[in-house]
Length: 275
Length: 355
Image 1 (cartoon, one colour):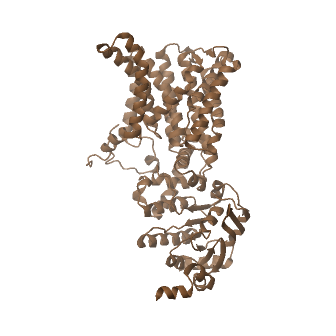
Image 2 (cartoon, helix red, strand yellow):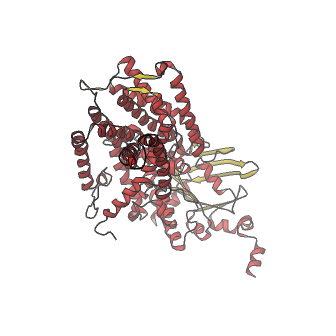
Image 3 (cartoon, helix red, strand yellow):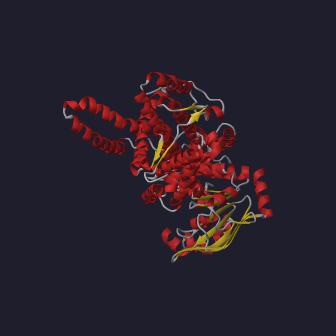
């Protein structure tokens, strides 16, 4: 597959897009992230796995600016972003979805996705008041891009539905659409398949791969479903107790003794389960 | 008005995003324009026009409060105070510098926007009831300041006479003349609000209301937009304050007390939070209600009560009606009059496929 080759090329080139150096985050006595360093290459799909409380979501929260790390640096495309306002980080091209969906319930699917275009649009209060002219032209131009995302994710029939009225799987999809509308260079997905049935999971996995192939978007993914992780990621990192304990290809990580102990269970306990 | 969307096919994004996408809606707007421009001034009594003028002013104020409370989700009980900022700014400009209306109105709105944005700063840290208390402080601080700083209030009784607005060389002295003036600004406010809420800034405000954390993460500077909401809302309040000052011919702080702030909250709750049409319904409803009760009691109260008792009763009945209506709407139809209207309209929207 051609795009597969292209991806391999990108990885070989090994251009680091996101470079996290020794970040830490403590909440009082709770050490959510002890110390983590991680380099993410442009255009790769990287999965973060680990037991509950390993610091996966806290890590994403630091990258997207929701938490300010106590220590360490986060460089995105040669720019220090640790401690920057989340809205500014979004404007640099980092989009994310949430573990427990954070859509704007009072708005239609279309408006939710249009909000993803917010940082790419310019009209302010005055041009919004006047509307006819600049604001209208801008709305129409960005609507066209939003429609591309809508048809990419097959959301055409839901455009004018209120998101609060949608089923769980669809809301996850709309949230992905909103993140994609930002035209992100880096996409952070926090359990995009949590709570989905098998069919929805496959659908989502396909979407993630397509996003990556078509737009070359770098994707960092937190996921618990091992089958999905092994299938779609190029690299897997494993967190435990706020530390990175392993990193490598899916196959290598699955064989790693430390990972098996921390996450998959020790050999003995697995035998015990089998017996 | 009522119209079926069946058979209306939009072929461009511009058509899909139009303010009035349906032909029937455009016809309705044309009808309303004719009604308000010709029928009202020709057919309505002076008394009715006077009441309608109050409604038009209330529409401007209610739209402003709805942008803040309904669209952005920031509670404010200081709306009347921001109106008084606009009123006194304009009154001073008019009385001292003989400023024309096209300076007095934007200046009043602008000053109110500045003060509003300042008192909106607590909203960056606090929400809900706590914010309500903070804006309550704004209400009292502004009221006190205007009342005690004679440089602003113009003397011991804190009222400033203003001359009527002059439009194209004509001073608008009567209520009928003022009607067109107020109608223009009310229509302007409605159009501007409709435009605001369907474009980038409006969407961002609703995003702040629905999920402020998610809003920040997708690139909306919630800090800036919360302050912008306070500023925009107070701008409307300031303009409404100036218009009210023109209406009365005098700026007086007693017209902008806490009870007026509560009235405006009642308007948007009863009309419908987060709805332009709801703001208009609510403004009309709350403004006409006391007049309607007064008229009703005057004509039918005599059957049960003496004349004196009725005069005593009127202000109390008004308060009782107010309270019970707010409770009624909160329980039965939290989305207000606008929701009732939408239910009817939606029935006709997909006609003839309505079930």
